[in-house]
Length: 215
Image: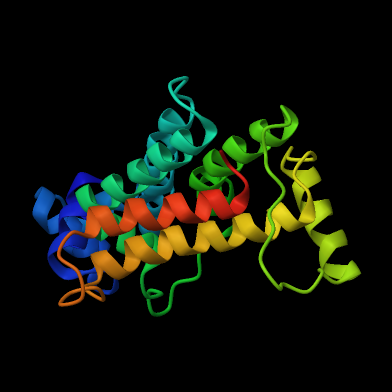
């Protein structure tokens, strides 16, 4: 796995192959197949490991007992950004361009939800304790009954029953913008626009958390 990560960093996911990993390890390619039956199986292993590591970083940050709900959201968001900056190639494997010819199996889903569930947990605990302020987007039309029902069902499935549909919509916006900011920074989209990416990130995730109802 370590050799595969080095190859991922040097050549990208599309160029990853069991033969080249075996060559770096000084093994015959048939020996590597005892551990991974194909290139896709190796990619899946890398993806699961990366999701688990990012999820662990996010969960550890979310479990802090210091500060307010808003503080915990910002601390967790920072942990996600810092992990991405420390592991750019693994982050790109998770959130960058799809690898040609590879389709991630369902076995990656559980690990893939870890980072998001860490953020959901902050909101759910605040809602359960009555600390979540009602989101009030100015001039926004009411949610359709179908969307509200869908969001209520999803919240129930992940143990966030106390989070109302309006807050769920705000969460999705905050969640996607958080990862969008990280991706834009990592892939150079904010270059020549801002110098202090950390300050931009903190300012944005704080405003999104306030819009979500965290205080």
